[in-house]
Image (cartoon, rainbow, N blue to C red; front, side, top):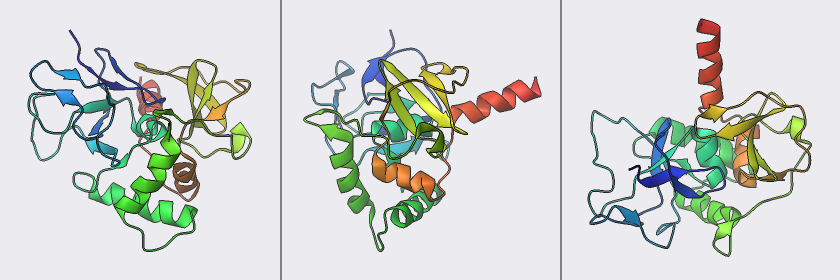
Length: 211
């Protein structure tokens, strides 16, 4: 029976056998005795994206009262849900993200806690995922941005929308109709300023070309 620990672009945490490219956390939100989630879906404003494999260490998922292991298809999915790179296991990526975030948002001398405060305002609306108006036409959004149209989430890549699923992305579409922004606006500005997230879509294309 899969645990409830897979995160969707809308920030929901569900049970599914697939894992993904990254793990991460929002603090301690589970009961280790039952390996089930508490009602609250975060206990810290620092929502992180971490490596699944760091220095050979392996964690038994939800086994102790430590941070609750969550899993993401890729970095774009984690960003859409409101997470940012971890400064412990992904220091280089986290520093690149902080630099791009500062540049894109016109801020200097920021700390991780400063980013977390902004993201926490942008990702939640009375406990639910906050959707935002598109800052530009969909085709002009930076690669790695995610949007919501109806009940579907889409990754923007080279101006086209790829439908998201737990298994990966579907065929690109030129138009998805009325859409709203899933990725927090400050993160979108970091993407526009040059941060390149790790995308499952890139790996899919690499495998397709290799085959």
